[in-house]
Amino acid sequence: MINSELKTRDLSVVWHPCTQMKDHEWLPLIPIKSGRGVYLEDYDGKRYLDAISSWWVNLFGHCNPAISRAIEQQLDRLEHVILAGFTHEPVVTLSERLVSITPAGLDRCFYADNGSSAVEVALKMSFHYWLNQNQPEKNRFITLSNSYHGETLGALAVGNVELYKETYKPLLMETLVAPSPDCYHREAGEDWESHTRKRFEDMLALLAQQHDRIAAVVVEPLVQCAGSMRMYHPVYLSLLRQACDRYQVHLIADEIAVGFGRSGTLFACEQAGITPDFMCLSKGLTGGYLPLAVTLTTDRVYQAFYDDYTRLNAFLHSHSYTGNPLSCSAALATLDLFEKTDVLQHNSTLARHMARQVETLRDHPHVGDVRQTGMILAIEMVKDKSTLTAFDWKERRGLKVYQYGLDHGVLLRPLGNVVYFMPPYVITEDEIELMCKTAVEGIHLATR
Image (cartoon, rainbow, N blue to C red; front, side, top):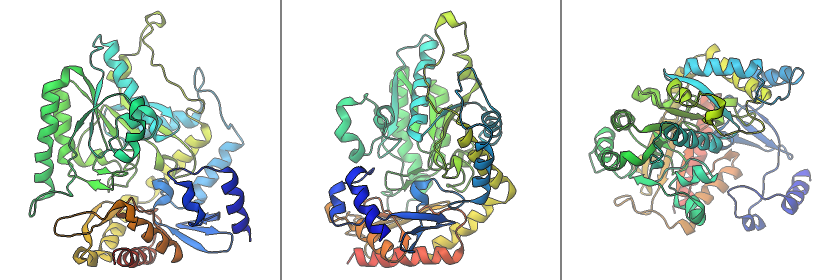
């Protein structure tokens, strides 16, 4: 009864994200009463295994006792304080710890409250750095085709997923686009590294021709998540770091979705052994509890803004809830969980188990690819396997998988024709088997 009442009340006042609201004339909303571990539960007692970590944010399960306790303890001390002219212990400690665990050379933390804003900070900071260096002509950005960096205007401008970008094109700054190095369309028999190296030639040519006016290159390391979970080899990051150094261009690593263990290492950049000039983090930073984002950068960038007030070189950016103590406390508790157990090794075991459970799909006549990077696994449904011809997007095959998943107690939220798993790290092998079995059955049903 409460489920039904909440649906009615919701649809009279709430406008949901990434949703054509007319769909809810026939596609039921799912009111959630509570969460525990990998499960969400509605008011009728039905449980749903959260296979996508509630939009990729939840690392250690819903209502994790350690994170909940840290927030409760902070709540009795300080809920919020302005971070301009003031500071507090949680933000200082969090900054120290982030500097210690991210790639060497990222020594300064600038806080925002969501992933898009962290990207906006990096873009503005890079542009402003060159302005302070008396190089105002360096004001353009290179992005990759099929990339996604958020939905505020700056972040949207450096993304390249047409579905997100085309509508707002008149509002966006112009960017330069290099072809994605993703390995989905590699030639038969070609390995990931060879294909990725070949795709880098286009980026290198663009940098060589236009580096005098380029402030930064923006990439999602290893996985273009919102861009259908397309993946590429770490060698691209190594080559890009070398080229950015050669041509004096900043490298912005958007690790918002792939950071904190999703890629198999704590940060995806580690797999290439590089340090970007800017690293953007959010999502899993607080274990899925509260909004928080951080843009880490180098002391070299920081020093370009460090000057007498009258020079007006200070960085111009702020958010009301910057460095919120409750969010920082959640983040600290999340980092504690990484320290107390060998999360990455455990994830490696879970990732192999996920791969085994969907191995049969590699021979499915309507599966064009099964790909995986760490705790991210994606399955691409296609109309024709031999040519990788996609199903017509209007057929909404992914929606059929979504509905099948809900009917069988699993929250899957495919990206178009791509079914993917990005579960919390506390998932068990039995729960992985349920998740994968449901997805496999849903794919069989959706591709008939």
